[in-house]
Image (cartoon, rainbow, N blue to C red; front, side, top):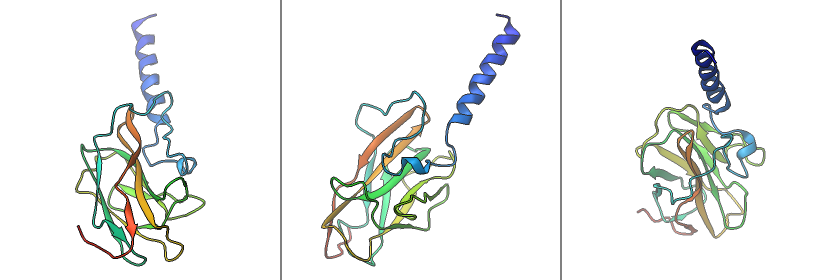
Length: 170
């Protein structure tokens, strides 16, 4: 193979990889599974270097909770609130920070947040979640898929649980 053909093949491979990525956010098809569409790339097997920091250890209807993802800078995410043994998206996300957007999942159009580009997001990025007005479960947690890079991501990163009840600031 000539050097020219090899160069063309390399350029095509790079363009193909870039076009397969979802730099504008997770697809709606990922709302339940939270699995990115990174062809041929599996989640990291080791524990995630990320933890969640929340503004409270409990929640109440009508009282927003702020969420931060503490750890190395990341480029992609899919963030939801859930309860145990359920894939239902709970509550709604408010005013997504820069470089993120609401993902309009069919079962809850404001129930997930994702990246809007591959710019770095840092632990100073704050997400605001509003609990549901009714039918609140006794306990919720935040769960995320966090992508440090296209080929480095963690699936199912979970926060500590938040209990329904008195609103306690941390």
